[in-house]
Length: 344
Image 1: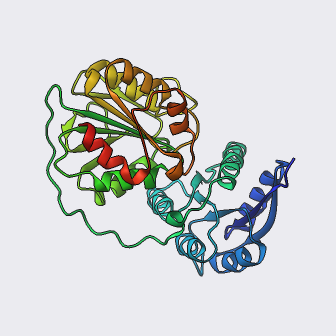
Image 2 (image 1 turned 60 degrees about the vertical axis):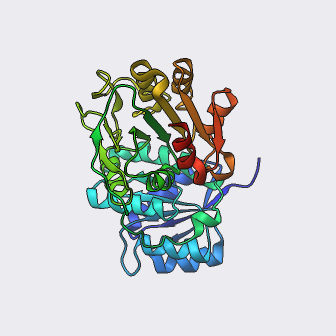
Image 3 (image 1 turned 45 degrees about the vertical axis):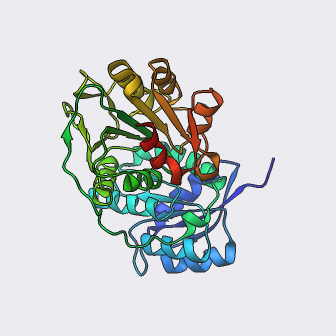
């Protein structure tokens, strides 16, 4: 057995620091090497302790989590898991943190009854973070993003138009941003996005993507219709599928691969309704969601793109698709948008 994962906890609440330390150290594979009350203390301790993973609160005095994250990524690149408040403001800040290089996040418990559930999720994500390399791209501070140069209003979707289904999990917000920001505003296809994320956070992600993409991006609602140049993101805790060839539906059917929304559900439904017009794209993420869906897409005559290991924050979902022999193209993230355009 290797040495335990060394974790630094950063939170302004003494109670939260105690709960996190007790919960993390209940796992024999994790040890808490330090605790900090704010971003200033965190920077000192990161330099002195060189932890394997940092858990980082967003809202703190003196130096908040976003500022601390930017400094950590620049000065001492270390995998970070954010702890986020269950508010729209907290969700927006968490999405911003993920764009700046945080590996993942865990919503803070809203009641004492949630603590066990949150700790189970946090332990799993700390273990993933510990083996997720912080690459130069992730370590680079985010630059201010220019507004999209070309915003074209969504156009009517016609039978036979391409349908893109893009799936992602851990590392997905950053990957989706890169792909969508490089697709043209006059894209002659409808786009469906499936990102594993809780409710309220998907809304914040859609807002962020819409702000920085030539495409129009919204969180999907029940009854939405496909349109060229429109990207619809499955909301947290809902599967996204088709009620007919042009109209979408949301449901809370059983989780697939332990997740809801599931890319398998969306891809399978798209394959049934649109056959060879479907292009499925599986980006970074843990697990195998998207593999069964990719099998449906291939059987219907569609195409599958999988992200290459070299750019995947977590090489789980793409690897599963590739090892199943379902990928028509295997490309690093910077080439995904161009590959989509080639296949249209």
